[in-house]
Image (cartoon, rainbow, N blue to C red):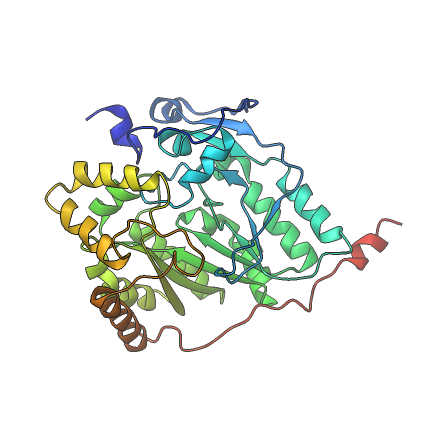
Length: 349
């Protein structure tokens, strides 16, 4: 087994659809043991605007925030991989090893909130790549952004599969006391061996459950997202995942069926053939069945949709087990009426 195979999700770089760009390499001191196993390069992202406005009519939020572009977690199925091609990189190994870092993110976020045209509303933290991926431990960009959310009392919803979020429990508790935060912990499997292959650098399942337990104990709105559900691979775990999440304090749950946009199809199929050759054909056929003969449908309102008997079983299985384990019993809404801007402007004088 080669070094890439041991430490990365993808094993090759698919052809980029676009033109290469030039970037400034970010100098970060790494420990000797990190350098040996981690050949990641970090580049300065000099973006002048931080919030990504969502124009997709089938996504229920308008703005998301991603401090990092590319993700060391290396989840083989990640739908965000093709976005790296817009940067001149590949969606394969490059996505995991060439990370764009928005060092000025906290300042840019504050400028957004100081803009008189900003309407207080929910911002999703990590709609694309995980805001708590490994380098966050050193750079603390996510933590500094959370301080800005607290300062202006703007609601935020966080999506992560990294236990590093526990570091910021102090800020999350303050946000939660005003009903300004919710956390979705991505939990795709309870099996370490599957996670080791499918999400190579993420926190292990037990660590994620302990995150849920800690957040719930501090009265922070926390739930799980089984994302993605992959037919004939982790779908049988739906009941056990929901049961475990409930036992550790989760209040809500959701799921997403596997999506394979653009080159992710090739990366995922290659991975399946290497890791699960005996099941590869069955899994692919199930996906084709759900997607009416395609591995992906990019059209709005159709890309998240699946059809057929299989998906009806999944819907029923998910709903019945949510009811059984007391998940999704209550609706909750984060507050927007507490937003403060003028008080901070006045303090400048």
